[in-house]
Length: 167
Image (cartoon, rainbow, N blue to C red; front, side, top):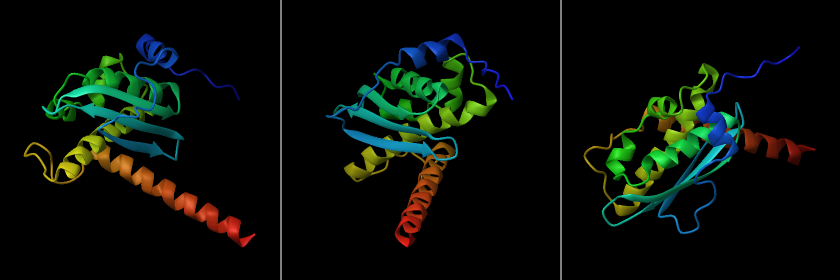
């Protein structure tokens, strides 16, 4: 059985080969992760935020496919210089559009990247002790996907550990 390559845009391939803002940010104001054990994609998102709630720097770490790396890279570029409220409003569809589209089987990569971004923004305000009026009370679709997949990963990890103890 042969596998045909996915129809990635030039932008996706460029960002996969030469990702922007790749790497752990040691002095990040806040960070969050999102992951999908179903496909193996994981993203850690780091934000440096100034006193005016402007994202002065964004970076990411990724373990995953070309689309995962490219969407996270693109999103870091899209949020730098934006206030947190503006960054929050970026959806996975916006990221996909900026990259010239995503194959349907890779939409989850955009969802994970935006989920990690929104989780980090929510964490920033949690640490500050308040929730801005523009932030929904409940987690967004992207946040829920990131959380559900992370919880699934924890469950699988615990089961594997228990199996190892049984042997």
